[in-house]
Image (cartoon, rainbow, N blue to C red; front, side, top):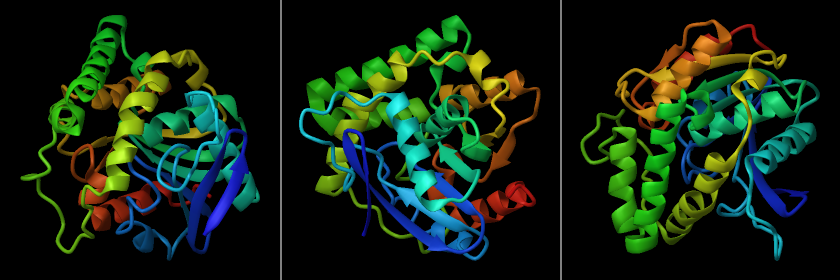
Length: 273
């Protein structure tokens, strides 16, 4: 087990493969094990690093640590990559992980060479009305969790993201991801604490326009255009004057289609190291 002490927490991380360092930053409540099917498919081309965000699973918070902020998450990534990489690293961030990657690019110049930001949960990228709507949805999910726990919150999340875990298409032979007690606790932290960090963050879109990191916005092939994180990716692409790349599947395509996702990430990152 790899453990890295950082201010206010201890980070658990995993390293597999060889080649340029590629950090995978997970979506939702996902910890380092979330992409168990994807990592081996990338490890022949990259030194793949995964980690538990502070407050999730094995990345424990110090006693009396203050509520986590997006700046904390960015600092954690910068410290983690200083530990495992010799220079600017590659990063693929999914949803929450994409939002963290954008924070790293803006707050820690030189840490990332290239960032693939897949449907980042970054309300500040949206116009005022859409931003208010996005924040309103996140707030509604928090209220659902507070009143009815995961039984109430999970349906709200799937509606918010336009996904149907019971019926959405996936590749065959995927590792089971049961809703264990640890994963339930991660959901609680994600909804109760990290949603607030997202909504209260004040990073301005203009700070992302010229970061020194090559930022590649990405969308899911089957994500509904009405989904706010999809629209965040489109807004990011417009800000940067580029076109988003398309990854397989929908919002959770990296876990539903790991083989196709690995092929696409390799193609997108070819020559970027």
